[in-house]
Length: 263
Image 1 (cartoon, one colour):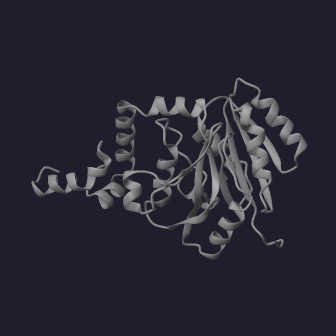
Image 2: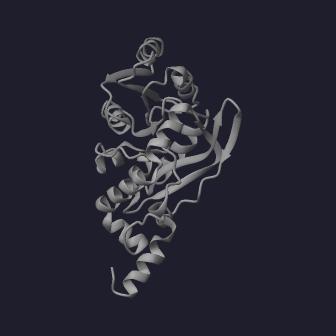
Image 3: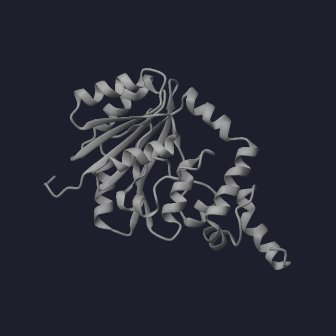
């Protein structure tokens, strides 16, 4: 690639992921895309993550390392992006992996069409027992209003992160990637899914613990209330009213309420 090829920054927030961090960073560095920079943000880890991150930064000139007190993944991503120089951003959690060709293929799409806001790919979920294909729903804004279908490691322009004010720093209710994609895409922009597996989502004890904390009915109600308060116009346009607890039924329920003058 020539010198005009844009820089891509891979943002890796890390909280107690020492067991997997080096594999994740080496996966990023193994990309066939260049130029590339990798920024690790230690979010107050209490394991060996800081030492591993420091060693990786010392041994690889494309890697830099930032440490902060524990403030959550959204703030950690914002910290890393503020320190970045890339035209394009790829968030990558500290235990996940990407394929060699993912970034190159994504940047080709983004460079060709400014209307494309996000590029992602097909993915698999994996653990020590093997891999399972991750069947993601097709993207549409109407579908996004009811559920998320873009994993956190979609590639996007840093300028769009700036435009929407970054990741929400007051949001700790789980599924932060869903809130972020709504914010970025609520008013338009195309989304492209590449037709190959380029993302590997690791299932770990930490992942399951997070799901337990944010997967119950109370957390779901708080999450829906937050989204409705922040994006009322988006839900009105896509669902004819607010997002409901039974998300799939939001639009027909809102339509029925409006028919009877109760909304």
